Structure formats: C-alpha cells, structure tokens
Amino acid sequence: RTAREAGVQLRIGHAHRREASLPAARQAITRAVECHRALGNDEGLAAAYYELAVIEMFAGRTREALACLDDGLAVARRSNVRLMQGALTTARGCLLQDQGELAAALEHHAEAARTFADLDARFREASALHYLATTYVELGEAAEALAVLEQAKTRAVTAGAPRYDALM
Image (tube, rainbow, N blue to C red):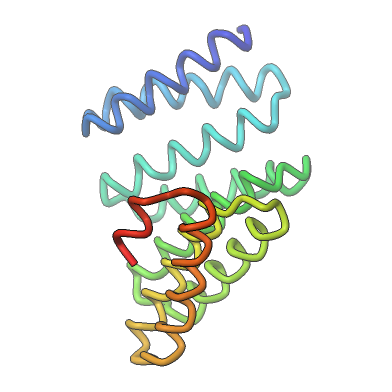
C-alpha cells in the first residue's frame, strides 16, 4: 500500500459521496482507511474516518457514523492533528444535534470553533459557529443564536467565504 493509493482512494470516495453513490464511496474510503492505517499516516487516517463518518451519516447509519467519528478523533488527538480534530468534532456535533442531544452538540460546536480560532482557520470557524448558532435556535435561545451568528458572519467575511456570508 502506498500513500498515493491511499490519497487516490480518499479522493474517489469523496467524489462518490458528493454524487450520492454511497456504496461506492464507502468501498473506496474503507480502502483509504486500510491504506492509511498500514502506512501509519494518522493525518490521512483521521481524514478517511471523517469521510467514512459522513457517508454513514448520509446513509442514516448513526451508530456507525459515531464509531467512525470517535475513531477519527482518537487518531487526530494522539497525533495532534488539530484541523482534523476540529472537523471531526464539528461533524460529531452535527450528528448529536440531529439526534436531539442539544447540550452535547453545543459543547462540540463550541470546542470546534475554539480549535479553528486557535488555528486561524476562519472559514471553518465560521462554519462551526454557524452550527453552534443553529443549536441555540433549536434550544429557543434566540439572543444567543443571533450573537453567535454575528460572530460567524464576521469570520466568514474575513475568510472571504461569500457562500457562508449569504447563509448568515
């Protein structure tokens, strides 16, 4: 197994996921997980777990998605791959939010926003803040939601992310 093969499988899986071909996406990403694990490439392994989790989320397989997110977070934390920690934490927060676990979702979105702020990843920070705001909306906390949404909008503008600016 090579790094090239792992990267190709990750991109193929991502492309299949974007086209909603989930079985083909799962197959390619599973191969990417195996390759990255065999290579000892924790950054690639965390990214592959993220992709696999999203596939499982789209397929409605919540338990499998959570397992992938937890595996990816464990890998990202042990190797201090902070960008992937943030991405996996955001995804876990979204899944918890979908399951109605709003207090846990708030914690995850806030943690992800802090991680992205520390990394000066403004686009990703804006995204995490957007999800945090939507969780406050679901909790009926409109004032808090608006304050966080304003922060998200500021980050989106400074990141040059007009599509996020339009959402906010």
